[in-house]
Length: 193
Image (cartoon, rainbow, N blue to C red; front, side, top):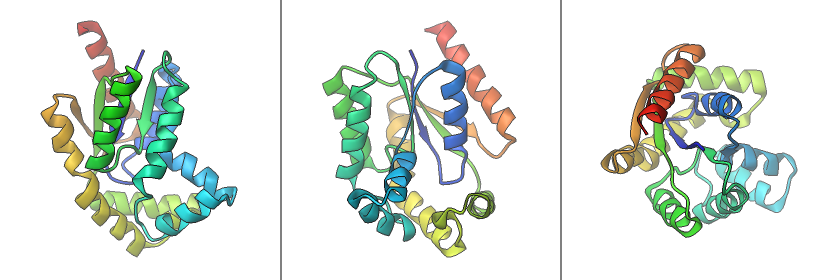
């Protein structure tokens, strides 16, 4: 059973790699971004509230995300999971630690995809054009998201490194190379476990 947390700036490839590992290891991927976008598309009250934050490049409030993650983790006690896009703040990371203790679950690794800002901006602008995502269509919003990431999410690197769970991955490579690196890392850890 595999339990992973993906970190990295927006556009680093977290979703792509989480999706690929989910298929390879037959492990459910939990993406708060996907869940939130579905709510926005369905124009639910939660989705309308979240859209205001997302369009401004801000993070959606913790209580909304933590509740969504808790509900999903409770459905997967024996299957494992891959968290994509959560936690994003120290408060969320601490809430996740408490939630996992409560559920009797743990995680194997925190995979941090490292990509330079200029590459992130180019990737997100391209994705915005391809997928019509409003949160990726405006360079000013992307730069704001990177600023929010540096202030609120980057501290998680130290948090998980102090726990000995962080694995740094060069995300500024072709998708297949990153995927192979991740698989090699995970297979190596499984053999030594």
